[in-house]
Length: 91
Image (cartoon, rainbow, N blue to C red; front, side):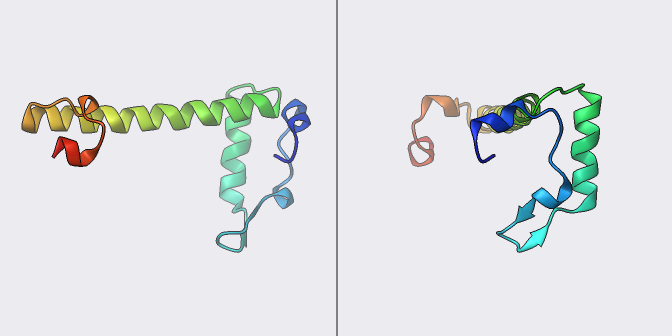
């Protein structure tokens, strides 16, 4: 995403537009195919739809992990980890 106008694009960019600078490699074909399938399955119309779907998936995964951790701490120590600001204060 290089500008806000990209949100209005009506299709995913071509595979050549993606490059992983951290690992110095191009996008894997399987990753591109999964992105295309996601776009089609959820009937996305713009890159904004795809962006919002990605963020929602990310937040839901983080929420799931937090709830699992919270339940484990509650079961093991009878403490609600959300009542502590830091992990050391919980310890």
